[in-house]
Length: 382
Ligand SMILES: NC(=O)c1ccc[n+]([C@@H]2O[C@H](COP(=O)([O-])OP(=O)(O)OC[C@H]3O[C@@H](n4cnc5c(N)ncnc54)[C@H](O)[C@@H]3O)[C@@H](O)[C@H]2O)c1
Image 1 (tube, protein in one colour):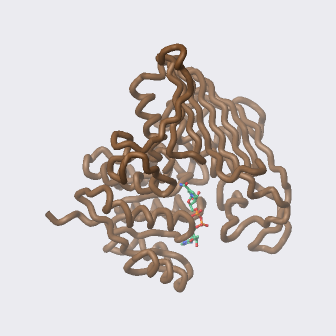
Image 2: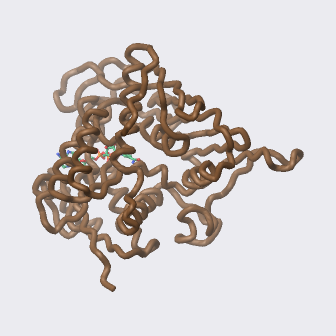
Image 3: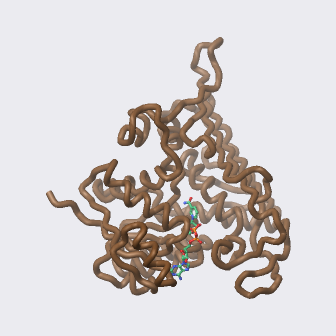
């Protein structure tokens, strides 16, 4: 039987453009389905660079204006891999054109913008997914399965960190290519929307909704030269953020993120402590899940490090043989697997735009609390 084509129109060919293109290229080799991914077009503002990307990754054509890409009839899925300030406009236009949408995280600059995106996909009735890829690391999915099985019992604590060190130099400029993350007009916020958004999405998935938050934020370097204007300008992002929260299930949460933790490049860790079992995960060792099971015989009880690579571990049976570990890029392949599965079951893929909105609401509350120093209630996505 002929496969149903999913003709992709990718916007943005930076870091995530490459991660997505790699996933699109791999998925059919390892996870056969009724669908076939076709790399139809890539869009970027620089025609020569877009063409070079198309040649390298196998896209059939290019566009230099994303509106033209969205208007094309030979595109089924718009994949948004652009800076955060473009997500809303591009996704709403894609929904109006009846396209399916894959959108990078954070869904939008803030909850208000994300609400408009959710309304647009609801009205259009189009399939949608947000690329919170860490859900799709097999060890993280295994954690979800253990939590859902009830093995942890009542959950008391959830804590997560996302630590980096790349903005410590005051000489680093802000804004423009590669550095738009330091300009809140483009990024929405600093580490809260960029890094903590990942931690928040995983936490909402594993441990349910967050009721309220109390945060502190800091901007260590107050002024930087702006790449686009050439002038020294006020820094508008949060360089670091720590927050406490209460989850709806009664557990307590503790989150921290910074780009000033010398020595850490991308240390995303989370730990969840239940009545019977605790779980720990670390992005630097992403193929392992640490498990402490209080039901183990007393003298042998202790933390065990499970190498998540066996045939019955999530996604792993489709890859190599047990013992051969998977890495960062596979999380994106698995996200595409989920998107296709969502189409084929008719249930839709997770995390969807509504889940992206839920994370944006938490980000909004954290930033508001960071400003006032007061506890802030988190708006719940309906
Ligand atoms: N899921 C993850 O783990 C993860 C990791 C990194 C980035 N992200 C997210 O992915 C998105 C992109 O981040 P990145 O690191 O790939 O950024 P990047 O700067 O590497 O790439 C952005 C791309 O968008 C293009 N672009 C900018 N304006 C455009 C326009 N008007 N029309 C067409 N193309 C345009 C740029 O030319 C570039 O190719 C962001 O939302 C970011 O938060 C997610």
